Every structure is written in structure tokens, then in C-alpha cells.
Length: 106
Image (cartoon, rainbow, N blue to C red; front, side, top):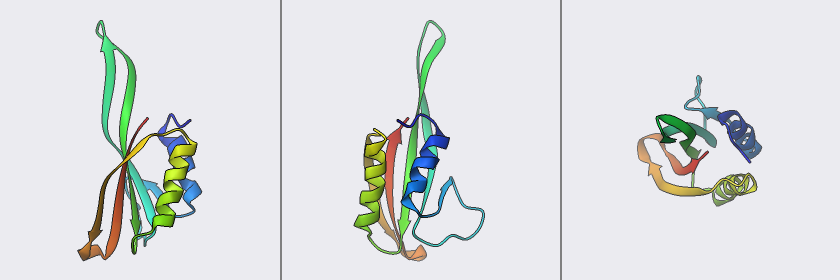
């Protein structure tokens, strides 16, 4: 089970494509993957935060629709017991690439 951003990075490295938190420092060409914390929520009572959860977006970029790579990403998430939602799929015309965005929570 993945419980940290570092563990998530290690799991995503299993895609065998470039993976980075938020962005790459240098130009990177598809396929590649970035992930980042979109929001954080806490469960609290009596003025104490007991647990925190992070909503994370995982963005997969490819030259064209790549169901094999998407299935590999989904297998990594399932193998690590991370429920996910695909929140958007879009072709970015000015970048000439396809983006699939997954939302997870850890």
C-alpha cells in the first residue's frame, strides 16, 4: 500500500517512462507522467487533526491514445490498492499530445 509521495513515485517508476513530481526541469517528450497534490483534507475533532489525506492528480501524456500504457498505470494503482478515477481525457492541440488525468487519494 502506498502512503507517501515517495512511495507513489517509486510505484509510478514501474511504468518505465519519465516520472516527476509537478514538472520536469528539462524538455521531456511523451510518453511521460507527472503527479502533484491537488488538495489536502484533514479529519479533526476537539481541535486536533487525527488524519490527513491528499488528493493527487496523476497526468499521463502520450503522442496518441495509449490504452496499453493506461492499463499499466491502472494495474500499478490496483496492485498498490489505490482507488482511482479518470477525471479527464483530452487531446492538447497546441502541444500535439494526449493527456489522461487520474485522481487518487493517499
